[in-house]
Length: 109
Length: 115
Image 1 (cartoon, rainbow over the protein chains, first blue to last red):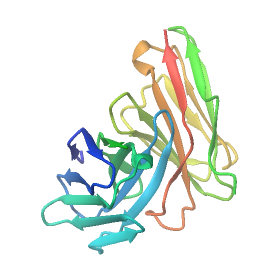
Image 2 (image 1 turned 90 degrees about the horizontal axis):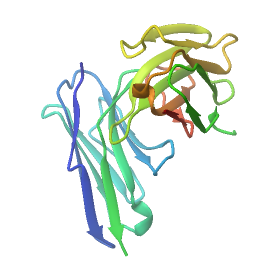
Image 3 (image 1 turned 30 degrees about the vertical axis):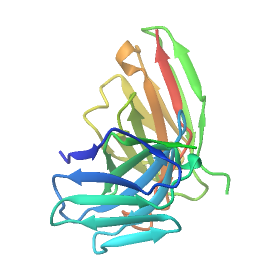
Image 4 (image 1 turned 180 degrees about the vertical axis):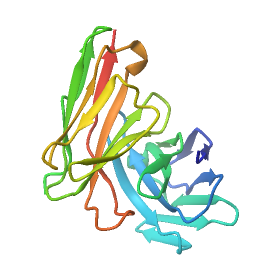
């Protein structure tokens, strides 16, 4: 079974600070990797999808990298805002998603 | 595009009762997935459909669980003889199915509480 780990479980930063969220996995194989955002009590919103052949993806203030050799992905959020407060989940993707437990982010105004 | 919808959004039931949830995927999406999420954890895969065919079921899906997608459009997930351990958020997602790695779009979920 694929194991996906996200550390830390929770993170609190002042507004404007850059966020660095980590995701590690045990089996790099040929998986793609996807980052999601989840607001309390809500469904999931896809943020970035990195194909297995890619090293990174960028969208606005978000940048995600993928290092299959070390089994790691990192999500960077530049210049954090209170609206970025949410739980961020990474998932390995090979037709079904295998999720980590998430990192809950609080951005303090 | 109205997105993935799920009904009901919340369900409270007593142990031993049966419950049924419905998921309406994005129109023309061929693949439909069910996941379960407990508090503080990421979602876990339960099952998925390609059109009306159920192609995989997780070991998490005990005999008390059954899912259908009779016409390849909406899907239902039924839990018989509910137990307190079934309390969770049940999430549905759909994708176009053009490739196995198409983005999955999630619904808002159905939160089940078993008393």
